Image 1 (tube, rainbow, N blue to C red):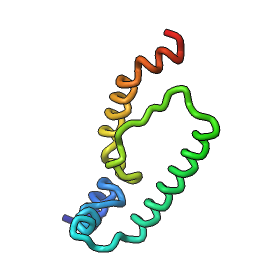
Image 2 (image 1 turned 30 degrees about the vertical axis):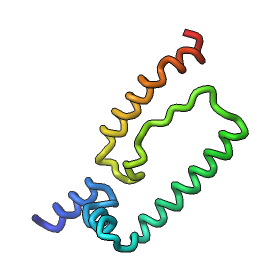
Image 3 (image 1 turned 135 degrees about the vertical axis):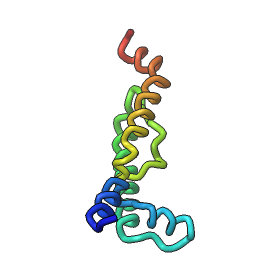
Length: 100
């Protein structure tokens, strides 16, 4: 494959490509990008928890997508499908809140 084709493939896989996943499984230290994304996720989680404690939602939709990284755009269909499944699971609670 040409260098451009290889770059394109890496972009489609997201910035967290196959080599990084293999490095994670082998126990090697995480790369700088993974550390930064992890720190951002922790920060976002803390801010969200703090805001929700002060003003809790009537219904919380929490799709099960923790296994999908922030930059894994190639897994969008999987994330969207889980979002739809989450709404279906929570539909009775949503209908109670809305009054349907």
